[in-house]
Amino acid sequence: MIQNHLEVKSGDFVRYHYNGTFTDGKLFDSSYDRGAAFFGQVGQKWQIAGVDKGILGMCVNEHRRITVPPHLAYGSQGAGDKVPPDTTLVFDLVLLDIFNRADQVQTKVISTPKECKRSVMRTDFVRFHFNGTLLDGTVFDSSYKRSQTQDSVVGEGWLIKGLDEGLLGMCVGEIRHFIIPPFLAFGEKGYGTEIPPHASLVYHILLEDLHNPKDDIVVEVVEAPEPCTRKSVAGDYIRYNYNASLLNGITFDSSYQHNQTYNTYIGMGYMISGIDKGLQGVCTGERRRIILPPHLAYGQQGAGKDIPGSAVLVFDIHVIDFHNVKDPVHVETTHKPEVCNETSEVNDFIEYHYNCSLLDGTLLFTSRDYETPQDVVLGGGKIIDGLDEALRNMCVGERRTVIVPPHLGHGEKGAGIVPGSAVLRFELDLVSLQKGVPEGYLFIWLEESPVQLFEALDSNQDQQVPLEEFSQFIKQQVLEGKGRLKPAQDPDSVIRDMFKNQDRNADGLITQDELKLKVDEDVEKTRHEEL
Image (tube, rainbow, N blue to C red; front, side):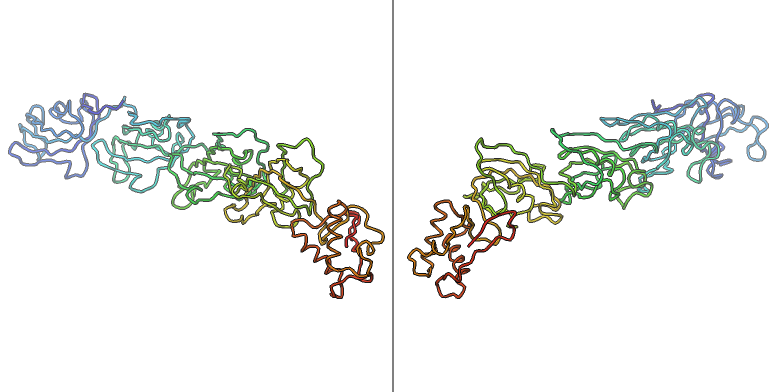
């Protein structure tokens, strides 16, 4: 423990300033005039006997007047031409310093952090703030005034021996008070003009940072979601939020302050190497703390005004999502009806309900906000590719959970409230299904078309087919399940378009010469003929 009130005893070394006068007040000697305090050992005849005796019990910064009779001063001989024989002397002293060869570094712990997972060991690199004073309170240095920490390796001779010893065992955030005797400080030479020879030093130290050059990153998993179907690997593209701080808890950056995630590739050198390494093996939704030694962060140079050189960095990370450019749409069927006679495919008209969210659970859209389900013709390019793909081969009543990577979603730019490069989660429920017709078709036969098609159209056998007759025939084929109109459009409008296609001279009538079958060019896919 620190001794707050050291008192001079025989054998101690002392430094003090003094004025020496005669009893009439005349000055005969002064350490102030010489600009150097007296230094000596008490009880070893380094000073006259009266002062040697009179200084006993003094404390640092104590002012004491010692009146010394001749027989305890210079006696009958005097001292040269300064002190006559048989002269009583008066010394006005102020004690500046006191130590003993048996002294060690005196340490007092002022405060300690609640948690201390690691403390200073030899060969560790530390960054600390300090106020340094002499034993009498005179300030000789302060890192706070320089606005820069003192940075050093411990136990390798970079620091004075007393600091090397006193820093051992300290935790980041701990405050200690040291008194270091001169022989463990700057000794008989002192240092510069601020630290005189034989000076005890007082340090008030706050440990800001600690690492070892051999350190790797430290990963602490704070929250691991279950299940975790896939972990990130090098080459994945990741979106995450983070708070970044120094080891002392001071925040220097945060994605939350920017109101956007940080998005980048993993393991490809786009980030500082410690983060590049620490983000591999994460799960979507995982929270982890990554502690980076400076050689895996910004090194000795630091970065900008907020990250000092040789700083250990702490990143608290929440993984929003990640994907690979090779990822397909992931489909999980959560419910499938027992009876399923037909499934959805390209060109079908479907109605469906959906919830669309980010992988962190943030709901973006839901069809439940509207009175009717969402509808679309599959393959028509009206919805994102991944959703279009996920809605195929579904039965009415089937429910699916679908994960759509951004390259099959809204891409790097996003859309509206959908962030750029966001992986999307859809919950799908197919409500209805109307089978479609191939692209470019308005009607297809579900059975073989009549061999004498014109005769079948020309119900009154007058060798011409007006719109009304044409429309009645087509509707009858649909009603009997022999043919199918293009869905999601007004049937009369579709039939009128079909009629116009056959009424090649636009006279309002179709003749035998005008009527032609349109053969599907992709016979292998459809094998249908259309009017």
